[in-house]
Amino acid sequence: MKLTKQLDQQEIQGLSVPIFGYELIRDSLLTDVLGKEAESILYWAGKSLARKFPCQSFEELVSFFEEAGWGTLTLSKEAKREKTFEISGPFIERRFSVQSEPFFSLESGFLAEQISSHEQTEAESIVDIQKRAKKVMLTVKWE
Image (cartoon, rainbow, N blue to C red; front, side, top):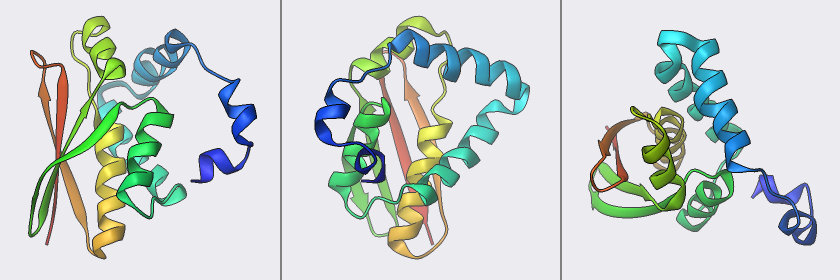
């Protein structure tokens, strides 16, 4: 994956970003700067990131989500022109605990563009936030 090829594995293991710093940028600063359009802009930003960091396999996609701090990605349902993914784990639980209305449009756009690339057609993603279960379901559909 392109993120980890820039540094060797030993260098990466010694580096980490405090979760609070990540949250300051993503959930506070970006939403203030982007204003009311934050969710839709971040969806398109996710699509752009997917083009810059293409994942060739589902395993790479899972790894990308983990490395980006986006949570644990699992495929929960698959149909002919639709896939439903779940994002869960400590990162997601924390976002639910510190934010009243977390949104996951960056992840949604990223996933839509990855599937679009794999399926060779336009794809869009719909987010279903399940607060009580502290998980997020992303359904990607294509024609």
